[in-house]
Length: 101
Length: 159
Image 1: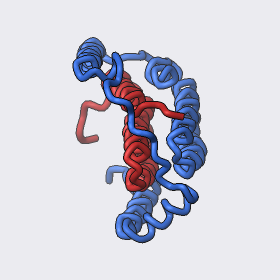
Image 2: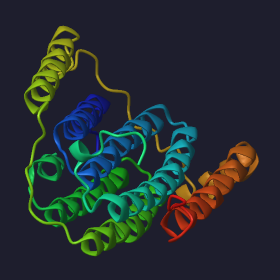
Image 3: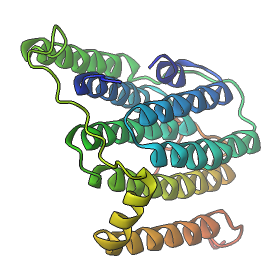
């Protein structure tokens, strides 16, 4: 199982890129949140790859914290989406150009 | 990789959430190959079990119609992504990563020879005890915030 660490880095970079393009391109808020999850996963792959490469477990602990933060972010983000949907009957980003209701 | 692309590309939110699920399983497999078994289990339980269910629940709850896929700045964003991809590939080539790794990769040290979970737990509860508590606080705040945001009547404007 000797995969060079560069492959993991390339994969994580590509996944991060896909997530970034997803955030920029899509207009559905839920998919934007999914793309943010994609980016967080890319950083997690990076962390674990380096942690295993350097033989240091701190990277995996950091992934643990990133996971908790991702879970919190998902909860709050989905709550915001539901609140927005109640107000506007839409989750299209282009409809939310106002900063006040 | 492919499923990650599908997440962004698919039109129906449910389909893209499901492809994200497949992608989470692939990432868990990557963790196993990287000798991080505890994180692989956590990845499946937390991401695939909890977060994806939350997403699917909201998608079903909101009952979204098919709509336009990309927004107006899509061309610009595609261009930006293309430029970033080209930069990554160029950098990789110039550093010799993608052609052939010039040096033999260091042997992957088994960071934890005695039980991955045990050593992570020891590290978590000794060195990273304070961030651990902060993480619990973050979860508490997120829970309260989610409840308050979705509760009817609190966020309504006074009329």
